[in-house]
Every structure is written in structure tokens, then in C-alpha cells.
Amino acid sequence: MKQSEYLRYDATALADLMKRGEVSAREVCEAAIERATHVDGTLNTICHPQFNEAKGQGFPAEGTLAGVPMLLKDLAQEQEGHPCTYGSRGLAKNIATRDSEFVRRVKNGGLVILGRTATPEFGLKAITESALWGASRNPWDTELTPGGSSGGSGAAVAAGIVPVAGANDGGGSIRIPAAYNGLLGLKPSRGRISSGPQVGEAWTGASSDHVVTRTVRDSAAMLDLLSGPAPGDPFTIAPPPGRYSELLHQSPGQLRIGVFTSSPYDTEVAPECVEAVEATAKMLENLGHVVEYARLEFDGMAMARSYLGLYCGEVSAMVARAREQFGANDDDFELDTRLIAMLGDSMPLSEYVRRRQRWNDFARALGAFFDGYDMYLCPTTGQLPARIGEMDTPATLKMLGKLMLALRAGKLLHVSGQVDQLAMESLARTPFTQLANLTGTPAMSVPLHWTESGLPVGVQFGAPHGDEVRLLQLAAQLEEVAPWFGHYERLEQKFV
Image (cartoon, rainbow, N blue to C red; front, top):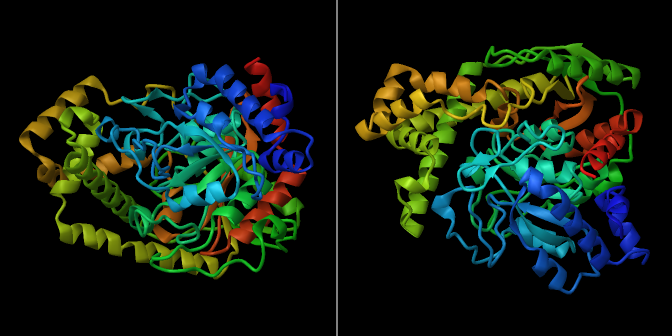
């Protein structure tokens, strides 16, 4: 199978070709490896290749996507016998002793794992640049970030290395790379895809696993494969009335969609992101949906603080785990990670609990919004992709950070208000994604807009808990009237 032919198909089409015997799984695997070899020297998406293992295995004949190549994200998607570093030198020795539920279901679906994609350390910063793996690059403009923390996966799928790649989303990490790479990125509802067996709820329930894809039907097929509870999960949510891959062909009906473009943190939103939403709103009206501007009534600063409390607490726990299990020391972690861990360690437990309890406020506010609307539409991100290195901590702040660490000044930073400033600086580029994480509701980024310079700009839709079906149905409707698959041909030509 020639590389140019391989790039023309999504995962669903590749699986169909193999089922009909028009191409073998080995030929597809070799085409994917050829593509990876051709482009990844530039993009740096794959941190742990498993090419020889993939070619040497007996290719599965069973499974809905049997023979389709995919990549796992090097964060939480553990594969027995392989490293899962979370982008950190502190976890370089972390070799999985068993498959995660996500990986088990991927294998049961017959997909062929080609390796693991790079992430930032512990999934932080919404960019994919780490001291361990270096910077992953955006295939639309290699001077720009592909986003994070699933940036390696997003860049790999956009560039055609694989049609589907693992991702997870604790604050936007499926949707942000989808927006920056021109992909469909669906973050499922809390509990839709099991986080087991290593944890009950990833990031205290804020994070969900799924994938990034080039087509809606591939996202639906993967949700069919991955969704459902596992023994020991903390709760079970109602399954859909059928298979997502079949239900998406039905009309979502006339939807009432509330639109907003203002950042919940009152931070600046790029005109291109607003323009993408406004153009999408007109498209929706032409499809017969009722679209109107609306406002979500909740305390944006309280949400930022609540999210940052989670962020700091999870990082401090990961650092502690790396120290205890693998003997990691200070030099094994990036400076920013150590600072965030210090903030987590110095936050009083009662304050952490109070911030976690505030999640209910945001869920109730969103529930009230959904009393009047079926979905919301807003930008996926507040800004276009940052340049590689742009988000690096300036040298003067690095010196200050080292001083704060030496003085163990975490409590002082909390009292001084510097933590609130950190929250705003951290979330200013991506202010629209955390709401779905803290409320546990499904949301997706859809690639419906491109700038004059050729950069993709995603728009985000959110729905009530458990309503992935209507999100996928709407995405399929939009894909039909404004198809985006043809845009990927530019990347094929770019990386000839």
C-alpha cells in the first residue's frame, strides 16, 4: 500500500478494505510506519516507537477496527511491558505491569499499536514541550505548538501517521490539540470510558480518555469500542440506545444552541476564534437549528481557583509517587513542575476540599443553562497556537522560582495572591475547556474554520452529561455540509 493511498482513508475505511481483502493488515502497518519515518523527524510526535513489535505480531483478524494502526498517549494509557513516562524524567523507569482498561479495549478491537506519543511533563501547560522528549510540532506550521497535552497524538493524526490516536482530557487536552491540528476531538462524559484498573476516577473525575480523529465516524467507532464500565468502577452511567457509529447517522432534530464568545476569566479572545464561532452559528441556522447568544452564570475566578487546586494537588501527588516508587530527585522534574508541586503540598487540605466542593456550583449553573438549551457553542481555545518556546518560563522568573523553592515559600505564594495570577496566566490561552472537566459533561472540538494563513481553528460544543449521541449527530451533520477531510491533502503535499 503506497503512502499516498494510505493517507486517503480514515480508520473506518481502512478496516473495511482489510475486511474485504483488498489490502492486508501488514501492508497497512508498513504504510503507517513509512509515513511516520517520513514526517516524524520534523514533528517529533512519537516518543516510544514499537514498529518492529507491530510488524512482528500476528495481525488480528477480529475486531471492529482490526488491523488499523494507532498510537497511545504516553500518559495514563498503560501498556504492559512498555514505559509510561508522563513526559517526565522522574517516571522514565515506570514500566507498566498490566494493560489499562483503555489499552485492553484497544487490543480487543484489533487495532495495531505502533507506539506512544509525546506529552508535556504530567500533561501540563496545554503545549507539548518537555525536557524529556523535546518539542512536538504542529504540522500546519512547524514553528507552532500542536497544543497539549495530547499534542503528540494530534500532530500524528493530522499528519497522517495514524488515523486515530489515544488522548485524554483533564482540562482540555483532547479538545485543544484537536482545535490546533484541525481534528475532531470528543471528551466523553465522566464515567463513559473506564479509567481502570489503576484509578477509579482520573484527576478526581475531571479527566476522560478517548481519541483524536480526522472523521466523526472514527470517533464514534472508537467510542463504541472504549465505552462502558469495568469491574470496580465507582459508578455506571446509562449506555446509549444503540451503537454510536449507527446512531450518528440519525438527525439530532432541531437543536436550541446557546452561543458565547467571552472568556469566563475575562481574558482576551483572538478575533479568529470569535469569527469561527460566528461562522458556525450561521451554518447552524441554515441547518434549521435555533441559535442565540446566551450567558452562563457562574463565577469564572472561582472556577479558575478550583481548577488550579486540582492541578496543584495532582502534580504534587505525581511527584511524590515518582520519588517513592522510582527514587526520583529534584533534578528529574522541570522547574515549573516542582513549583506547582510545592503549591500543592502547601495548600491546606481544607482549602483543597472547599475548592473541590465548588465543582457542584459549576455543574448546577450548567444544568440551569441546559434547561433552556440543548447545547452550547463557544471557541475551543482563546488564542491561536503559541510558537515553540513561547511558553517557556523567562530566565528572571526561573531565578525567582528557584528562590521560592529554596525558601519553601508555597504558603507565602498562596497568601500573596500570586497563585491567582498564576491561574490566569496558565488558563488565558485556553479558558473555554475547563468547564466540561469540572462538571463531567461531554464536549467536542470540531474543525470548521481555517485562517487566511491556513491554520485550523476549532469550535467547541458542549452538551448535558451522557449526551454524546447528539454531539456526534451534530458533528456528522456539520461534516456533511462543511467537509474538512480535504484540508489534509495540504499536509500530504507539504511533507512530500
